[in-house]
Image (cartoon, rainbow, N blue to C red; front, side, top):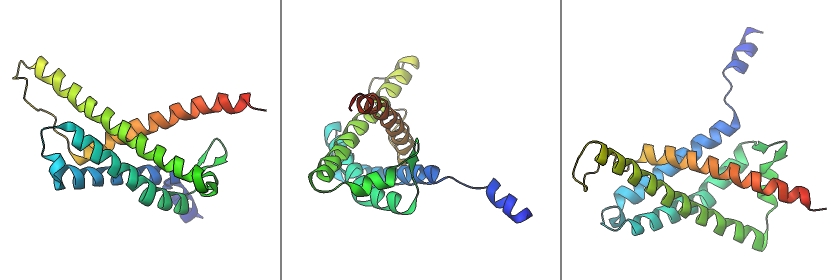
Length: 169
């Protein structure tokens, strides 16, 4: 009896595990693309944003989605996200996958702008030279910002989608 109570007290939800997997994969992508390719070393941030966004998007499509929707039981307001994912076929699945890559590109661009604004604020607050980078990109910070922005964007999409679905007969 005590063992059953102790086990339920330390239970980690599937939603938390899926979020941790998404966080780890985003950090992995930043590590491999940001530190392991030439795009991370170039002066132009557009190359890094593009390649990192595509890498995170393809990692989500081909690694995260199959693992998360096979292992974890993910639900949102009583609706099974697993069933919705596995029922997509043909052109709907292709459009969804392209949307995931486009979403990743947008989120990476937003994360880049966040890093730029943080650095700009700190440089101006400390009266430092304009080219000074105080908060450089690194996998843990990138993954944390990616998870925050992804969660916010997904919540916004659900709020927009919900009234549209209620209006349809």
